[in-house]
Every structure is written in structure tokens, then in C-alpha cells.
Length: 579
Image (tube, rainbow, N blue to C red; front, side, top):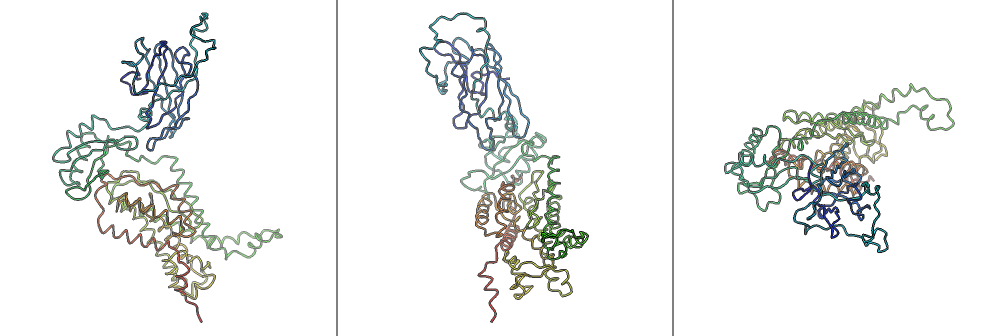
């Protein structure tokens, strides 16, 4: 419990006395932050009548934390002598916290604050009193025993937003631990600290500014081991680029700073039961969307009796549905191929993460009726050690899925021109091959111009599976948000480059330049589920190297060529009219 007085920062308020020596409450929240509404109930003899109405409720929004008016409970003043206030805060994650504080009885010489009125405070404006009111203080009052009983009336007061955020926010770093870290670990041999600042939207971390006294990797290793020896697993130490640095480090590269965070704040946490349930449900829906894609590709093979039953209103007798068994069996290979690409994609992530000791969450597959799946959302369940690990894990999945898709596309094209495989071919509109500049050109080169001029093109189902897999892989390589391409861009070129590439990616999706008709669903998918950037690594300064950067640029160009459409002018140049 906290006693509100001159040393209490909880409400930045006080118990004041007017000229007529009557007490009243005064609260003044920080104007540049906002205020949080709290409903208070107290005795009528203790609270002024002008507080007996509701004041306009405000909303507090500091950084990423936002608390609306309906997330607070009541606070009750129990007596006029020693008032106890209990506030219950509703949390967005469910449940709540209850906090209490005590307001002592005001004295005759200035109320609850020593030294009288606070010049920076502003009391609530008093309404004008009616001169004809029967409650005039000059008129004598008749003593009534019922009037001696304190009445409880509702009143709204404003509490300090900063203190409320401290109560409901994440755990912060102990100041004594920061002092011990600077005394024991920092110095002229490692990192000379010149200042410190709060870090994070809610100030949950500490940012240490200063100058390096050695190679950054060696200094970081010494400080990390020292933090483990001093505090165990209580904290995590991050090496980041110094924000707002005016000049680079004299030793080369950017200036660095160190961030100290509590383990429970920086650790992503384990996968919960409901997340497993969601993943299983999404897995089933994605399998169904892949099967639907396979069935759609085989519609030309439906038995005539079944087609007539569903299309002719006069058909009464249902057909033998056993005829659908061969039809469904013919749709399964395509469904297996499309879903297999997504599984292989996730296996690539896991194979790259396991040797580095990085834990991955269960994949959340997302269905798509056009391509079978958007891919899967896979979260990091442990802090990444460095940017190289982030890069390798991020690109491992698209490379694995892309290679499998490319092999299926190549095998399907070779079977499409094989006369012995004509019984397995399906017919698709030739206009579909204009959806990709790279894939459409490759298909035209294999099948020939004469085949592409027809309205329908006969291809093997593996072509469709490889095409869908390569398109999905290219979309996931877009350098935006927390997609695989966004993570790789952040690791290879930094957060600023990711912001720039993300802007142009959104612009091209909005204009329909990437993926054609698929640009709208993919843009919504990114905005709703994948727009946030990935968190920083422990060593977020050391770069990935030139070879990885060049390789990623090449992969981005291939993905761009896959998503750009084959426009009509280029088609006419590639397919001149025959005379």
C-alpha cells in the first residue's frame, strides 16, 4: 500500500482545503501522456459536491500500451479518517490485477501535501452556486442523526498514467543491477559507459551508451558471460546499433550500444495449448484447400452421369457415386504435391534452426483456394543469437520449397510433351500462363508457341503443383514484414532497408503489379498476419557477409520475375502472327 503525500508518485494529487476549510480531492495527470479514468466512491462529507458527477473519460496511449476506459474497475474510499483506495485493472490478455493505496486524513494546516498548494497543479473548476439554494452555509442547519452517516456517491478522478502503466506493464530492470553491471563489467577494457536511457515503449529495458574498447564481438562475448555470472538467467544482453548516432565507430562499422532486458520480457515463451489447437485446425483447412485445388484441375474428367445430375434440373435419379472414386483419386497427386511443397518448406526451416539451437513454433498453415496455401506462419520460440542465424533460417525454407517446386515443374513439363503420358494430362486455360513472366516464358519455351496460342493447353498435373509451389515461395520471399523475405532482408541489410523495401512491396501489391489477381489477397494476408518486423537478435550488429547479400539479391530477382505478369506487349513480341 502507498500513502499519497509529497513522496508518493501514484496520483500526483493531494487532499486540499478551500477557504472554508472543507477538504476536496485534486488530481492532475500528465498532460503530454493522457489520463486513465477511475471511478471512485467516497463519503459525501469527505468529497466536494462538484465532484459528484462524471467527468469526460480519456484514453491513454503510450507506445504500444493502450488502456481504454472500460478496462478499469472501481476504487472505494472506506472512511474519512484513513481512506483506502483499491483499483482493479482489466488486462487485455485476460484476468486483472488489484492494487491498493491509502490516503491519510488531511491536517488543518494544508491538507495531505506539505507546503500547501502545488503551483504546478490545477484543481477542478468549481461550478457557481445558486444563491437561492437551501444548502447555503450561512443558514442554520437542523441536526439529524441520519445526516451523520457518510453517504457513498460516485465520483471520477484521474490517476497518473505513468504509474498505472508501471503497475500493469512488464517487469523492469533493477537499478541496482544496472549499477552493478557498470561497476563489475564495463570499463576501459570493454565498454566505457557514457550514459543510459530507458529502452522500449514502456521503458522495460535499459540502453547503455558509450564507447567500445575492443572488437565488438569480443566485448559482447565478455559482457554476455559476465551477465550470466552475475545474474544467472535473470537478464538478456543485446548488442544493437546506437540509435541516432551522428558518426560511425572509429574502429569501423556502426556505433554500438547494449540493451539489458529481463528474461521474461525478451523470451518469446513456449507454445500454449490453444496455439496447438489453432495449428491443427488450420492444418485441416489447408489440406482441404489443396484437395479442392486438385479436384478443380480434374473437372474435365467428371463422369457424364454426375455432370448431368448436377447441371440438369430435371434429373431425379442420382447417379452411382462410386464413379467419383477414380475422379477423386486422380485429384490426389496434385493435392499431395501442393501440400508437400509447404511441408518441405517448413522442414527446411527446422533443419537450419536445429544446429544453431533455435527453437521454432509449430507451423500455422494458412489455406488459399487459388494456390492451395499461403504458406505457414512459423514463429521463433527462442532468441536468435545473431543476424547470420536469422538469415540462414529464413532463407532455408524458401530454398527447400523452391527446389522441390522447380523439380516438379520440370518433371511435369517433360511429361507434358511425352506422347505416352497423354492420358494423364489435364487441360487448363492458356491465359493462366500469362500470370508469371519467368514461369510463363519457361513453359512457352518447352511446349512451343503453337500450343500456347490455343485456348486450352494440355499439361501434366505436376506442372500445376510446381507452378503453385513456386508462386507461393516467391510471395513468401517478398521483403516485407515478418515474411521469410522480410526476415532475410532485415538480417542482410538492416531495419531501415526493410522499411524501404516494405513500402515498395505494398505499393506494387496495391497496384496489382505482383501476382496479378493474387495481389489483393496476399496484401491482406501480410497486413493482417505478417506486417510486424522480427525482433532483434542478441548480436544485432555483426553483418552476414557479402556472399549472403549477393545471393539474397539474386533470389529476390528470381522471385520478382516469378510474380511479375507476362504482359500483352511482350506476348505479342514472343508470339508473332503467322502468315
